[in-house]
Image (cartoon, rainbow, N blue to C red; front, side, top):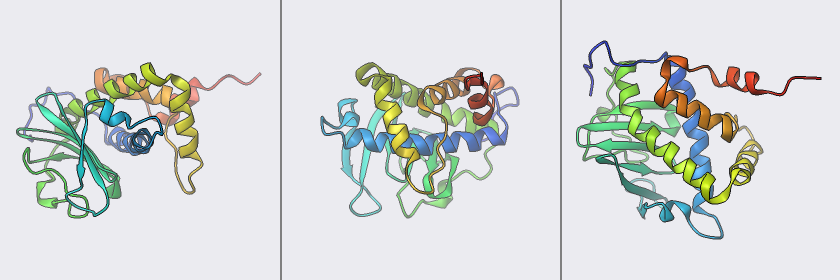
Length: 202
């Protein structure tokens, strides 16, 4: 997926680090959606569950999306098409272009030879778009089904985990992801977005 022309949209490297932080928080959210007493919402949204090909005792969630598929594990998440795709590997705390469409990340193994180390920021941005489209579609489905309070409560639970660095609150997170997807030139750092959106002191 490398070798795109210079007119392809690109973003600064710090925004790619921000994206990784945002996806890491989202992974906690999705994990909470799985263990809901009322039912596994990932399954309701068309995912199929299977045993992980890597770490024992964990699961993989997979669904078709945009001429490829989304895969979610507890330690990685991504979208993979015929020519490769995009992955976020949580232990590495980074997003990468993935070089294979048929062989996807195996937790614990990670197949480093399939991570495109020559990819440019433009390559990585383009590779991430199908995954971001799914992420937003899914989160809007959560909002429609459960309302804002459900995700807010999930966020506050995440903030209480020791040594966890919470990202944006869910409403601002959706705004940031949407801007990343549709208006990358207008992106701001999450901390600045939070500051701009904070109520003014009396």
